[in-house]
Amino acid sequence: MTARVSGIESDLLRDAVRHLHAGGLLIYPTETAYAIGCDATNARAVRAIYRLKGREHGKPLPLIVASRAMAARYAQFTPLARRLAKKYWPGPLTLVLTQDISPPPPQWRGSERGRRVLAPGIIAPNGTIALRTSSHSIARALSRALGRPIVSTSANRSGEPPCYSVGSALQSFGVHQPSSFLLPLRGRSSSSRGGVGGGAWRVRGGGVLVVATGPLPRRRPSTIVDAHGDRPVILRQGAIRVR
Image (cartoon, rainbow, N blue to C red; front, side):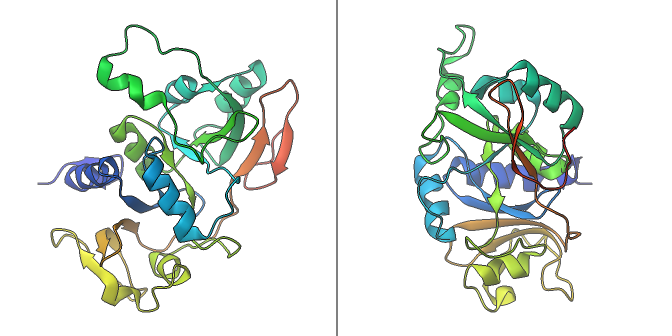
């Protein structure tokens, strides 16, 4: 019997994390839509996402973290941010906070010290980063297993609508016959009439791994709140109405 970890088979989770460690890109489900991401500390992988999406440089990429504790390693939490995170995390609320650039605590092991250095393309010119703890178990499990934040931007070309299936995401990126470009990872994946069912798939020749759960419900994107000051500033009204 194959063990499951937070909604994903443990061996698939290991494969996905190994792929992220190697600088690969990953399409995966979140509570709002399918996202494309990578290790947020890998500059080459972050640049690859900008190229794939056709995203404007200077528009930082948001992150998913496994927990509030992980978020606190990378961002400075104001009293407002702590209150919002406690109330709405895990969930579709992205907080914009000042990056924490203080030296890592001495008790961190040497292998962990580099994990705090986020790649260019994550940090805004004013020194802020955007992050959330997802309510989707797979998205959280990926960040937890990697041990650091993962990029979480919508799996589509910039300016196009969110994608709620892997097939539509791949079509947005120019793959017009998704099923012919997907290779089952270790033969464990399943297909459906919608094109891609649950499991893990490797995109032929693209350096992209897909973790699929089938079609997702159509939902609004995450609400984005600038919380690095004393008062919340709504940058994007989405799934959560902050009170």
